[in-house]
Length: 264
Ligand SMILES: Nc1ncnc2c1ncn2[C@@H]1O[C@H](COP(=O)(O)OP(=O)(O)OP(=O)(O)O)[C@@H](O)[C@H]1O
Image (cartoon, rainbow, N blue to C red; front, side, top):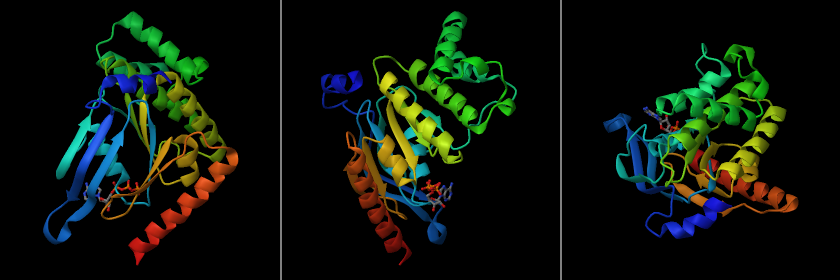
């Protein structure tokens, strides 16, 4: 993929879309302090697809918020070498009064892109997420899966078109498919892989579903709970069907160990 090949030309100092070094995050103070992250080191290469996996409450969302610049670490460094990262959440969070097309167009408008280019890019993105015929519909007229497609197109609009072209795009996804039924989730996972290949954006995808992490990611990063730390990583790209099932078993076992250690 082009973005992967280009990464070697970027040079060692900038060969990452995001880099976290010794990141700590504590909420509150004194007796009530919650150490959400206790020293996280993580690098995401340009164009890489990384899945963050962990039990509920282990700090996945906190980590994503830090990369997005929505919050600051208590200690450590978060470096992001991309345009403004785009974020996609579990709920589509669309503007209810705007059509599907207008929701996708909004970040382009806010990014100061001219009307003709905006319309053309929106049309391309609608086609990319296979919603060409639903452009004039408002969110309440769409199914949950369609709303997530609009949210995906909007995130891509924001990641790809407000970023300075010399820097890689970064898409941050917080359990974006977890509220969907199994069939719609399966379809959208396939779409996401297709879009990721087509755009070359780096993706950090948060999930607590091991199967989803292995299917989507090139790398799966397991976090421990309270404090959240990187426990183990696996490369999971290019696996055959049987190897993929094996990886799911191994990672599931390790996830259960991490959860039971925490509970003990
Ligand atoms: N603003 C906040 N104030 C206080 N505590 C917080 C705040 N945000 C998160 N926490 C705590 O930090 C820890 C990590 O939360 P976070 O939402 O990042 O976990 P998560 O892994 O995303 O969870 P889930 O999978 O359930 O969404 C939790 O113990 C949570 O209660």
